[in-house]
Length: 232
Ligand code: HEM
Image (cartoon, rainbow, N blue to C red; front, side, top):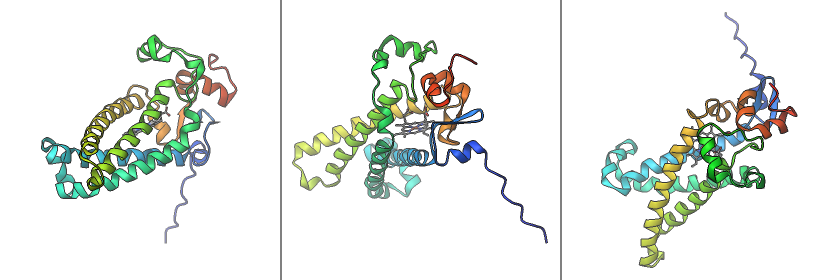
């Protein structure tokens, strides 16, 4: 009889990242603890399910998408329920991250030439903490967008309770919000993957390399390690 092999030990950084964040482990820094990563992925999954069940309801141009979910009538039934799940998980994400997302006075003026320099990879700003101003802005936009789609969605779900003008405005708000939302999410995915290699691992393993942290978030690096990010 062959003996059952014991499971290999977990990578120490991954082990720490289950419960803690903002700590250095060897050559890595834990950026997102497991619970935050799970919340983020529930938000992402419910967002895309809402998008893909909602688009065939929106216009027949995307009617083909309904086949993936069992047809248009299934989409009409499940879409509002997944919408509730998206709103609930976004609310949990807001509670989880809001304290880290307050806009920073030292970053005043980020939305100007500094943003352009950042996008052109020219910006070396010693004051960038755990999140830069663009990420914080995106976070609050997600909160606002989630409120916009849930408010307008509830009106469309229970139309008999609202006057015609409110129902019509709800349609416009729902459509404008989800289109802007989808565009923002495309940018978000680009910036969190191919634009900044090493970022995606922060949402899977939970960790980033020290080099990544020094480059993109030097103040956070300093706060976590106590080391000067300019010294290599
Ligand atoms: C496949 C799709 C997605 C990928 C690959 C992705 C990836 C990531 C990564 C890697 C981070 C961490 C960035 C960092 O630590 O600096 C992050 C953060 C975040 N994600 Fe996503 N995400 C996706 C979808 C979404 C969706 C659909 C939403 C909301 C509707 C969302 C909302 C957020 C927010 C609010 C943050 C924190 C702010 C920021 O870092 O930009 N993500 N995401």
